[in-house]
Image (tube, rainbow over all chains, first blue to last red; front, side, top):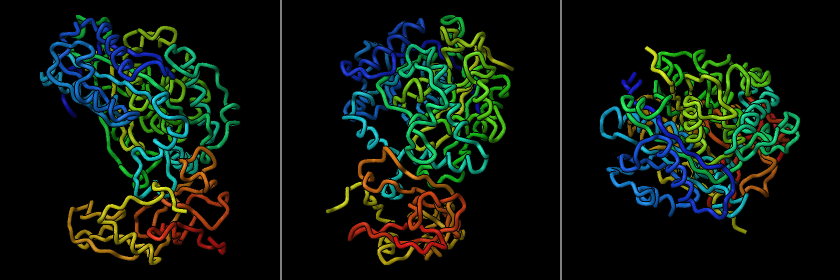
Length: 396
Length: 141
């Protein structure tokens, strides 16, 4: 266990709608969401001393711009000591949080701005270009790509084995998609907001057995940002800061087919340690922002963290316990499945949503009185299991 | 007609003996002579104990299907001509596992834990890929 508990908090958030905006440059997503987050934080822009952009994969030149301090200049931040990229694919949100908190806890930084900006919607040549890009990003060019492995088969392999071991069904998978969509209906920044039914999910074409098209995500443009500061400063800036209470993680593979258990990954150990550090248990959690690029990962994480028994998570989604009004709100922005997948942004959006719920700024989809949130992130082909717990108060 | 570039393994030089062997119809893995761990994919040193005392050994080529999926739609461009095809993770008797394709049977007949054995698919002059077929299969692939 580290000493990070209760040392730092998210005090400001910003996000622009996920979608397709051909008329907007990538830098706009970063600058607009960062400006919102700074304003939301109540911290003067010139008091931001550390900037961490995460990675953009749609374009290498733009990513180089992020690395070489473009955000600092475009935002007119006069007193930034360091701009450094923290990028771990879908785990970027979680990694940004623990990096920022550590910098603040040690005194190396005072006010940290974390930013995501991406154009996977209009920044690529078309639908097939997205499939081809994601057919190789993070997938071994020697041991997997030559066999036709791509992101659909990655998810499908976990689904097949998990369903084989637990008896879970395609209806369980569909119920996760339906639950996320119900939250997205209440999220003005989400792309997919029309109601979704289990029948519609199961009627959609099969991509790779047993994965249906409407269990898959689509790539879009997007941007989001958050500001973190010390726990001492936080209450002066923000009525309900989102304090970092606990975090842990595990790295379990690079080459997906080297993973020991594609139905569990490292979630159980990471979750147990994060909860122990926070001094909380799953029953204390008011809102669970669980990474959902595909429903299988949301189900696996949900169970391995202890919110349901092995193979029993699907029932909670089918019973709508995870939906608006349910007893355990899950992935309340609609996730990558319904808000939209924006590369590293899917995970950053979940960090922002966790903070938004705790800060009581979630509008129509606010979980009343939310005090404790868990956020999870995972990158590449689900190479790591990142668990982060936030709270509006710091338990003993 | 030459195959698309992404279908060719991007070879880490330390793995060259693996690809030379598949061209000869052999599935070679590595074994650490210090800690006795079987190693796949090929490395320069043992990932278990970091010893450089590793040697190449021939695998029995037998294993089971840990998981699989039959691809029907939205495959990467270079694999569209193969549809439908089966991607799988096979666990070899030696305790290592690898990504591969299941061939030599109807894709509908593939099941988790199914016993399989290696077969070799020469995709061009340079590369032969190790694929797996059901043990009782009499189909030609």
